[in-house]
Amino acid sequence: MSESSEPFWGWPGWKHLRFAWLVSLAGLLWFLLIYGGADVLTAHRDFRVRVYLDAELNIPFVPEAAIIYMSIYPLFIAAPFILRKRQEFLALAMALNLAILIAGICFLLFPAQLAFPPPKDFGKFPNLYHFADRLSLTYNLVPSLHVALSTICIAVYSGRTTAVWKILLWIWAVAIAMSTLLIHKHHVLDVITGFMLAWLAFMFFSHCRNWERRN
Image (cartoon, rainbow, N blue to C red; front, side, top):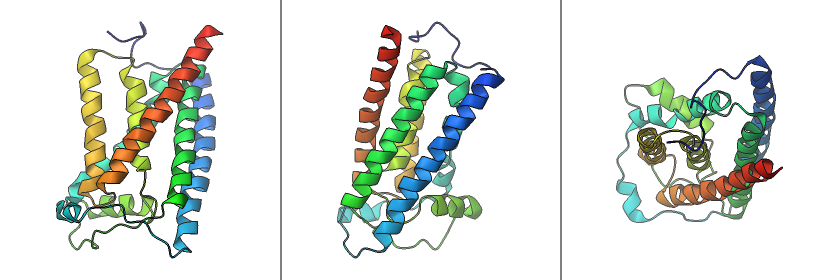
């Protein structure tokens, strides 16, 4: 059983949706400032940190994995329909924004660049791959914010559902993490540190939620 007696999914009402849209818009602007800003600053620096092992260059390129890679966005869209209380939604938004801030600091401290050669075959869905490629920018590798943000959402959502759905959600989280490697957008260290960042942000979410319950 989930920790909540409420249904996992439900209509939150227009008032909550308007609140969620405003909070999400602020979060998007925060993301563009930190993520985009770090990439621009790194582009003007010569220093790079090696974040990969030579063996990683043998990871196969599977451009079709961009479908799984892009499945992070339904996780964001689902948030107000799963977290139908304003305090819980706000706690998740704060956790995501904290992860973005920490990642941005790391991007500047450990400027990196992908070691994979540019792909020549973009698979069956070239437009989708190119879209994912543009969104990921160039230099923001350690930690993988794609892994961190998707894992934070899944960690929060999995606490509200049954054991079977928990397993499916975590399979989804692992699949998204693997997709970052298969489309050659990240290295293994990026994925590991992305999970670590997600754990830290989830602890922050839990603290916010527990504090709200006590008050």
